[in-house]
Length: 466
Ligand SMILES: Nc1nc2c(ncn2[C@@H]2O[C@H](COP(=O)(O)OP(=O)(O)OP(=O)(O)O)[C@@H](O)[C@H]2O)c(=O)[nH]1
Ligand SMILES: [Mg+2]
Image (cartoon, rainbow, N blue to C red; front, side):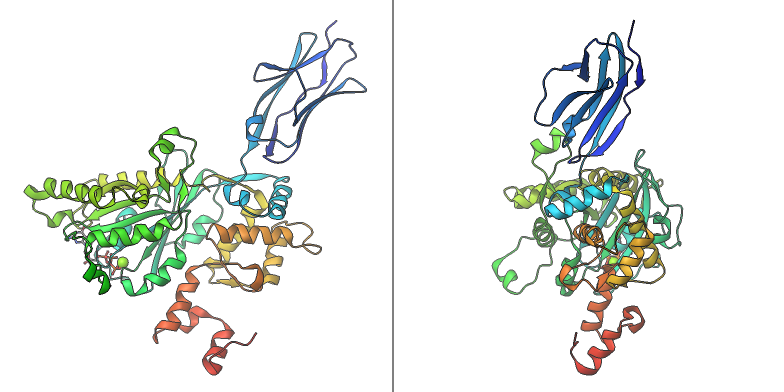
């Protein structure tokens, strides 16, 4: 007589670092059982895998803690009858791995009530003033460029869209709608893509740097019709860097501060020793070069890059060079389509691409987007607790540890600004800081943008007393 599985194995999904077990029950039968992983018999207990037989013909395989290598197909056989199930071990986000043990524990606890994948693309458009950064962004969004004005000093123009994660297609179908609205209600199928278009005036570079981050794709825009002279000692003393080459070096130096090794599991990237964040150079203004001279100009540009950057580590951030014209695009805009595809491909190599996050964290993230879309840019800690409770964060009356871990994670990936020692002031949208900076450096600030009582206090007393 063959033993039947009264209770078969069931598929399990777990975050790496947590314990998981398969359990099944057979009818009464004295024959022995054999466990398999991916068709290979499991013969011995190991440090993290244990097999047990419990009274009542219950068989248990425990993995504690589960690691990514434990993913696979598990099978138990008894007297020619088998039961099979899949174990899916999800990867812990890199950012969480780098946080404290306590934060990791909070994260793991939160994942037990479900996780979802989160895809995020942040694109930073940097480069000298008047080279066509804002026009490029408009072209990427399939918008007209006739009314583009120089981006004001400190300002950062932002636009958002969604990208289908499977097909790489950009969804630009909601122009004019508040981008934060299109982000709420999205699902695992779409990546949220946000562009930050910086003003090119170099007087403001120091403040721009506050917003650079390692989890972004950089578009370094240069006007190919300009000269690319090399830096000379005298020019450095004068702090003038007006040639293409100097700008490229300047931005690469800044971006290099956020270096991480590329680790997307593909050998190709590792052997190339690329560094993230990736920098795509976009040369605009090709229409300004006479047709006969275009090929020579392109060659000179590549030679120039090769010569000046060949030995430096910052060169490893550079990826493809795109050469195009915002002013006279091709009939079907293939050059912009190529750039869109390239941005998506590079975004997929970033460390927080497809992070598995506790579902309730994603719900809270969406709530934050909703707040921003209605003009709320800062929150007190108590308001954050209330918001988190609405998103099913448990036990917040007893401990706020999970909320703190969430806020720290969002801070680390550059979504919000949160410091544990100034807990009570959470900046939901870093762009708000740009407006605050403006108040300090310009008399033409818009007070309604700031919307904080501390500002009037600062104006009266020239200090904030806390
Ligand atoms: N001929 C030509 N002109 C361009 C091209 N791209 C932009 N322009 C023009 O260059 C000027 C500056 O373009 P913007 O997009 O505002 O440049 P930007 O880099 O955003 O400038 P800032 O915001 O001041 O840093 C505009 O008058 C554009 O029409 C291009 O590819 N070819
Ligand atoms: Mg601009």
